[in-house]
Image 1 (spheres, rainbow, N blue to C red):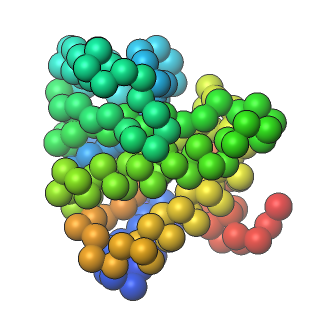
Image 2: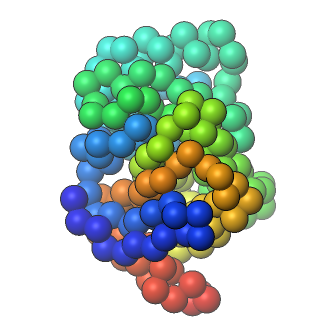
Length: 189
């Protein structure tokens, strides 16, 4: 794990951009970039579910059976199985359709909803992947701007948040480079 960028919000919450493997993060919860059926068939979702083990698959199926498809703004959560965290928060990010189907708002809702769910669970630390930037093809720099602004807005509006450690954990070099560029120059195209 390599911390590449870091800042602290006014309420004391630490926000980091990390190059590493999200499944190795020792945090209260990791966020899974899921689909609404929690099928975990590809991308980071498949890796998280495979490493987490059978409990992740079983609880995901049970969640959808009980609650129905997972909306963007209300992530599901399951146990973590074999992962070094307490929970997996399953956030449904948008599939990119050229920006014509409220993709920005849906990504923002998935991030915000994940932070809210973590607070509901009384958690202090959470790690996010770059939701929707892989197989869902959301433009990486655009996603980075939304991530940074949403997380900043959340803590401005929730100064007494239980969350003290928020990580954005990126593995592949192209995504990492895009997120670094936006962190260092937020106004760049």
